[in-house]
Length: 436
Image (cartoon, rainbow, N blue to C red; front, side, top):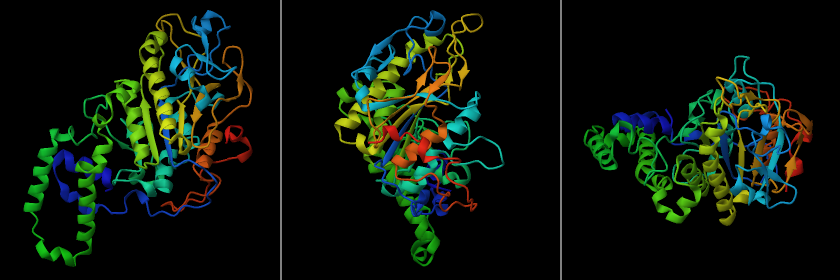
């Protein structure tokens, strides 16, 4: 049992004796890293637009296309000459010099599960092995500088749920999904106030009861396993009541800063992600749901796109102001895009379906330049005309910015697999035109 399992078990049923099964060196922080590159990034924030955001209403608008494609929406200029984004993105338009756009992401899968797996691992599903997602691998390889006993991979506020992200690395590298609502007055990880309905004071009473029931007494000094038990329990209490808990306490942020991000689940998750970067967490994913817009696409975007635009612009701007953007990769994408031609007929009523042929992504920070565009799509964002970018190209570039060469074999993996981190990873096709 790793620490996240410990916390969920302990907080739900109050059985802190589960700590006996936890190693103090949780999350593989003792793992040796190999084949380093000159990458700059210490942390990665993944903005996973779960369900598939439409390229035309994001980073590849087509204002001159027929109404059946653009729905009457326009492109707006950014603060970089010649770069335009959708009119759904007025805040991001003001900071285009801080991020770069990839307009020609492409792969062969239109199903959520297969596309998500490919975008996260660089591999097609099947073959009897579940490979780890990028977050799990970076948690294993770059988790040595995390402060306050925090997990090395945090998901705000839910995991993707499409596959086991830890893969063959094991559950200790799965994302710690916080749950809860970060837009509440005081956001804390799920379990601290929610699981089992236990308040902080009730948790202290449970811990006291555990101590009162301890029958080992002085004999524990002669039992090596009890040393691990005590260390794990101490670490878990730190997450509950110490500096780790404070990282999730957004009430410590100025009200002006919270309003800047937007007082909603996605906006406050982005603010929490910045605090986790400050605490040295190597991988944070924000899973934004609601983008699988088969029906009433524009009605849905009118509600969720402004929240996303405001929060992502605030996150990138905030990281830059605090001097953290240079060492933090921010990447934005979904598992695919949406069909360029709008389905106005029943039952779709103006919907867009899954579309993997050509879609958009965005990268910022961590050694990626801003104010640039990669790739050219056709007049309706239906086909790649110039510079196709595969999931392997994108993932390999992020790994390289984090100082990890993706052609190396998986390090210290439990099944002794000799295959490389990414298959068919050609450094020549990586996004090096965006490297600083």
